[in-house]
Length: 434
Ligand code: AMP
Ligand code: ZN
Image (cartoon, rainbow, N blue to C red; front, side, top):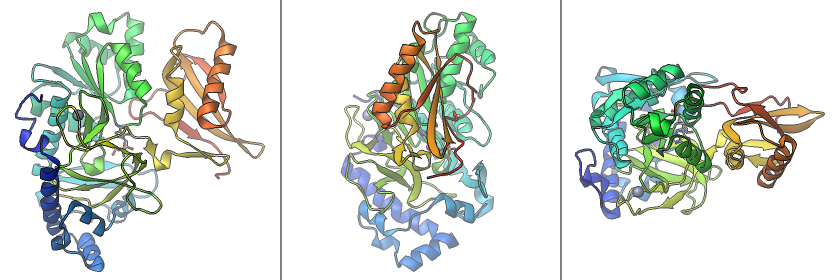
């Protein structure tokens, strides 16, 4: 049974499928009307000859144009705003590796709705106003900072804006303030635990930690289990992206059976990235999201590049918001090596099955004698009794998974570069790309 709260929004969270769909149709029509204030969308709708009245069911979203990251770049900085700039109170920007960065604008109403969405996620995993929430993710332009800050405050928790880094100080906060919950990227959680070990701190005995929100980067089920065992906590997957606001787009519930995407905020589609046609439930495709509750900068059919699949449309927790699988990665993360498609998460999944290994790893791709090669460097927790045998076994298991033989190197803890933000898992040093 769902516990009631003002953040649970039982009127929205426990809607039946029919109610969700009716709300989506209504909100999509409103969003389209609102987007007519924006020259980019107005032109696109006119070119396609589509009007809000053409939206009679949720599937009619397919009549609308896609929006891509390139569109955001081309209209940089404010070209996709659907309200005058004076109505906006915040912007977030992601730095592009090439060309213009992207900018996302928010009105006060957008920020309020965003905080409500994050509060709803945090309530769903069992956090309450009596909890102490430490946000150990980067602040500033990265939405994981302010997004969780306002959401956790909205729920009424004592919220510690610790930000990322300065791990010794992080740990002091955890012990001194009685922190019960942390939000951090998974790779940084591992770092916190390493430093706790060095300090002789036992998270089970010396801290009050009980719940973690981990996200912002792909991670495997194995990595989640590692984190839970390491700290003696429950760790929940948190999915978000700046284009949709930030965190709060989707979260796991206590069942830990996939990410609930909030369908009163978004219309979710999974499409074949080549044909752009919908794929059946259960099949992997590209996640496409349409915002239906945003004021400053609604995005229609935004191609996220994230690959996932539908797991279900009901849940024992009582929520009927669609459940998607943890992200397999982004289509841009896919490595093509000697014609084989490989995602970093496949490698992580295998590495995490070896309890001797830590969660820090780095995949390096090189060209040697015109051949693509992969080196997997991974740190071990304690010096293995038989290094050669362990290396061999890891290599064999990786080969079974990715169908080619990587060069595996085991390294002592603390050897690989540590990042406080999203981890860099792949270094592609190949001279010739396939
Ligand atoms: P940003 O807008 O910089 O916060 O990056 C958003 C991207 O981070 C998403 O499109 C995903 O590729 C990735 N991401 C965010 N949360 C998760 C998650 N829980 N699992 C996997 N990838 C994630
Ligand atoms: Zn659920």
